[in-house]
Image (tube, one colour):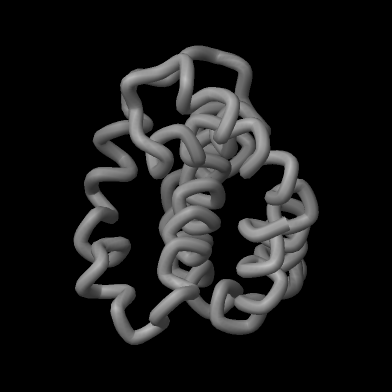
Length: 130
């Protein structure tokens, strides 16, 4: 697979991120799940239509690296980073559940996500405030 493929995947997710943010705002009123879980669910369903019971535990497994303390260095950007991270992680889980990527590819993409976020932070922040 070409080296640019992971970034292309994340760029595709970033392109639909503003719509996902709007969709999540609508879902929050109809669900007990918080915005992080909702973003992950929207990301998951971007690639997979089947129901998923594991999304909550998958996002909770990343709660340490997405906590307020872990993201404090980013100041006001922390909310946007957490939101996009949950959306992208949900999307990766959707790709995995639908058989489009295997577990090793899932792990690789998860490892590449922070660099993509660092490289595209202004666009990610803009998407959450639009």
